[in-house]
Length: 229
Image (tube, rainbow, N blue to C red; front, top):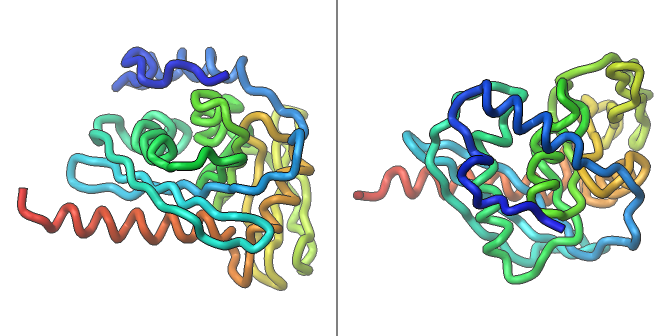
């Protein structure tokens, strides 16, 4: 069940209140296996304008990894940039984008972290809890914890350990290409996260749904910011 994400008290503008909300939401995260193979996977990413956030949801169908639908959501840019609080900066725009899709995703992939986070509540966990949809973090850089460099082969991975807990993996998605950092967000476990990320990756370092959402969010932000107001 999703939380009432439109409540304004869930979107503070200061770090103190945001920390308290992180503590609250982190207790609602559930790391469990997926109950069935997902068919519709959504990638999320956001771009910034002068005073707005532009979130893009790109829905793909598996196993073909075929794009189905894209949707843009916008929200005010009214929270400071702090790497471990991206959910508060980008969350409303991303939620609007997901809610604008005609089909509900089975799983959401985020350009960011899940439980591999100082409070075990990265943007994938944060927004996954609010939406009540299985979510996975897939980041280009590590945020917390220690890991060993994985093997050079595609699919090689090594655990990320934070607070004596395995919170994710460094995953090699292509031969001899830098790893990405995968962690479960909500309603999915680590083995399912690894398997799904590899299924959604096709010739590039990042999964196709995230690559498309990244590209389209920047295109839309650029066009909208350049248009007359």
